[in-house]
Image (tube, rainbow, N blue to C red):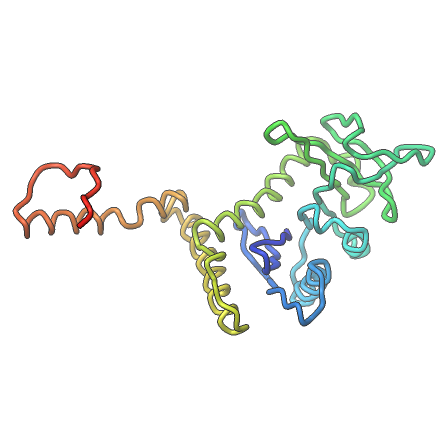
Length: 249
């Protein structure tokens, strides 16, 4: 199950089941409620657990890696993989606190102590020459020995699906184009966009489409081609169409 803040006003929780990454809960920010994104996270988590969802792991961006959130997951005896800010303080021994960016972290991770939580394993990846750090906690103590680089990569791939999901919401489904103010007017298009992203995932899972971005690029190709052919026949114009701009009237 993954979490991320997106689009200025929507909180999402995703679930991965048999390779599908689908939203299972969300919140729309309401300033009148005076709640933070972490408040929404904890509310949604309680709800989905009550619905019967039993995630093996919980993952999220660094904005959700607060001490209270991680303790809540740990107390439910569930594992987690959360991104950490590079200046997050941890210690290895003798309570000498260090920022995670200052640590020498092997590929198989490094056991450290996180304030207020206990022992975790930190991993480091690189994206565009920038380090990214992650805190991994297994669902039980016996699993520590098996949590190596290969396991981290598998969990990280699932974590990355959060980013992919929000890329679908923004450039493909245009959730940010909702320029309205009334609560009902906001809820309707947001729900429609989330439903659209679910449909795109279903089509991809069933091999109806291979790529959501390609679908968007080619969505109107046949319509445009048919329009051009009709225009040629009706005007008697033949030949290729140039890219020259028309002169103003």
